Length: 137
Ligand code: ZN
Image (tube, rainbow, N blue to C red):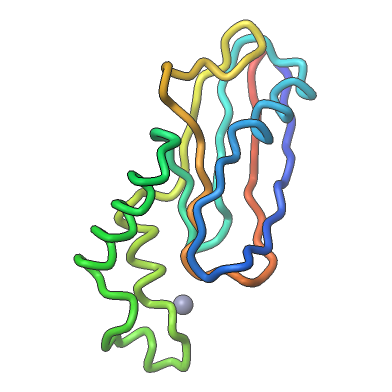
């Protein structure tokens, strides 16, 4: 069995940002030499999420619109009584799910025709990391 662990780094310009990371994840898989296996992509931060969906900017705006409607970013939250201002970012990440595991076949990400991997940052403008762990043969 082969394994490879890599860390992608991000420091977003905006507090809330959606970044397509399919190519970076594919590069780690190529470097690993794994032909058949799995890749775990974990945002490593509790105010960010990794998801798989369509690369369509309108849809990305729709996610944010729905999240804002369900859990307004600026509101009264007990977590923000600690001096932080990111309670909604924690909850948004929880609503989207936090990490993904994707298949590797013939040495490549085995994605459906419209599937892309995204890093969703909900409390950015500081250094963040995404863990990419490949296992397989
Ligand atoms: Zn917090």
